[in-house]
Amino acid sequence: MLTFKPYYKNIMDIQYSYCSDRYQYTMAKSFWDNNKDQQIAVFNLFYRKAPEHNNWAVVSGIDEVLDMIANIGKEDAAFFKKFLRDESYSDFCEYLSKLKFTGNVYAMQEGEIVFPNQPIIIIEAPLIEAQILETPMLCIMNHQMAVATKASRVCRATDKDVFEFGARRAHGPWAAKYGAKAAIIAGCKASSNILNEINYGIKSVGTMAHSYISSFGCSVKSEYEAFSKYINSHKGENISLLIDTYDSLNCGLINAIKAFKDNNIDDDYKAGYSIRLDSGDLAYISIKARELLDRCGLKKCKIIASNSLDEYLIMDLERQGAAIDCYGVGDAIATSKEEPCFGNVYKLVQIDNQALLKRSEDKIKLINPGFQLTYRLMQVKDGKTSFIADVSCLKEDNLAKAIIAGESITIHDEYDQYKKTKINQGEYSYKILQAKVIEKGHRIKEQTKLEDKCKYYKENLYSFSPSEIRLTNPHFYKVDISDDLIKLKCELIESLNKEIEELKLDID
Image (tube, rainbow, N blue to C red; front, side):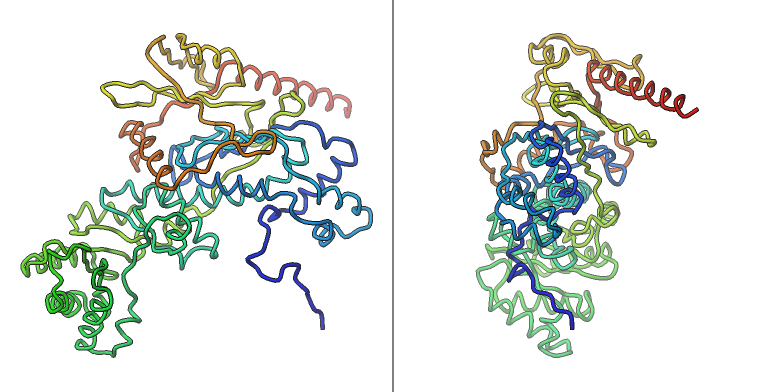
């Protein structure tokens, strides 16, 4: 019988810096063999198209990426020999065991609103160090940005609180943990996941399961007993009763009201109390429940709704005037159910100061070459910040210098030079979206608290116009690249086209 002895004794010990694809290391071996390991590479992590007809996405995952980078070089040669088995890899495995990240990293803040083709993370490092980051970095960023962007959509569907309830639907424990974090950044008020509270201090929330009620027996009387005993177990805490085990309106709600009143839970109860609806016509049931609760003097009893909700169902419930105070959303957020695969990519844009691009046969896969930074132009009027436009520039190109100097500028549309926007001197300020977070291998920016990331996201969100953040038919915010970047891109394409034509002539 074949046996397998795992390298790690415990699955929790797995080093996620090496959650990678084999070809990252076979390419690295070729770089090493050909003395390319010390060439300084610049890679950009970005996405080409936002999911679900969004104009934009929400950044989450940067701190986990920085932790991943810090843990490169913590495995011995024996680890690498587990998958680079041939003897010809022996010296290379020794090299990898001593390899540490020594480069620079520039990144957007978590909670940033980012548009297609803008660099979210920029890696500037020796080629092998930069190359082997690709897979674990994309693994982290694609998951968290999918969840954060979906959570943003769900939360923008209502002005009521949204709770993230998706741990049981997440694609594994780590996805549940970091997905909850991403959801909180993008607007969810709280999460049911206790790891969120342990790791980030954001209080976890919850109600009860149907199994709790059923455990007391299968009768209307036993439902009341379950409610009453639960209330007594949790006096002084926020209490929420699930009322749809048998019949939401005809027994669950009545038993909940009786249990609340019999145990002195009323509008003077400071910790807060609620009922939860998890099935049926949520609009109708919530309206009827609200009427009876109010008639019985329980006007401060909140109504929580769950049951496979997403932004579209929530918008419809709001349109119907549902008497719902907050929504619990599970798989729609935790798995980014409509589009579970986010499209971040990681592309080499410069090597030893030489700009590079990938052209391909698909127009959407044409990338912007060179070291780029994105400038968000804004104005402040009556104390409110409003975003005007984003423009990505080559590092220290003419437009970048003009923006930094506060001069009058003109931004051209990359695909239609007759479309242009002029912004006069004194009418704007700016911020650079990518900040240096690692310098020469050392982290130089401290991790921010989760609540600060939430605040940053909300400040960004409401600095766009309402038409730019609506869920359906959003107005497109102006996003361009500098004239110098356009020129460089065109020159590289023209040079490639010329060489391709010459190559065809050689074959003929």
